[in-house]
Length: 258
Picture (spheres, rainbow, N blue to C red):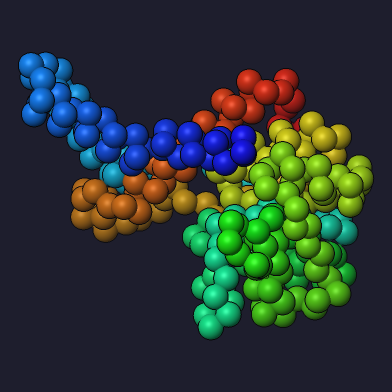
C-alpha cells in the first residue's frame, strides 16, 4: 500500500500533472471566486513554466548535469556480471519483442547487449517485478529482448521480485555478493542507483545508457518550438530530483563515485 501511495504522490509532483493542477486551481479562482489577481497570476506562471520546460535548451540544460555524472563504459573490463535495472514496459506477444520496452528501458537492454558482446562469457542480470496486471515481469521482458538480440539463455539471469531500485540492490546483493559488477541503467538514474548499491555493501562499476540531454547539432526550429519530447526530459529531472530527496530523507548518503 505504501509503495503505491509513494508512486501516486510522486506522480502528482511531476511537471505536467502538477502544472495542470495549478492551472485548474487558477481557473476555479477566476470563475468562482473574487481572487482574480491570484487566479491570473497562478495561471500565467503555470503556463509559462510549462512552456519553458517544453523547450529543448531549458530541459536539456537541467538534465545534462545529472547525466554527466558518469562516462559511457566502452567495454566489459573482465567482470562476470552486467546488471540491468528494470524500466518501463508492457508485454504483448504479438509485437516485436523490443516494442514492449518503453523509451527508458530499451536503450538499457541494447547497451547491455553491446557490453556483453565485448565479453560473451559474462552473465546479464535483469531486475524488476511485474507491473500490475501483467504476467511478464520487467526482468522477464528485458531478458526476452536480450535473447532475441542473440544473448544465449544460459547467460541470462532474472531477479523478478524487486519493485524499486532499493529492492533491486538487495536482490542483486543476494546473488552477487561483494564482487565487482557492471551496473547499467539510464544515465539520469545511475547516480541514485549507485548510492543504493554502495549502501548495500556492493562494488558497482557504473555504465550509463539512454542519455537524453542533447549538445550535438539540432535544427533551429527543434530548439525554438515546445515539444512533448523536451517536456519528458524535464520530467526526468523532476523524477530523479524527487527520488534523491526521498533517498536522502530515508538513508545516510554515501559517495556515489566510490
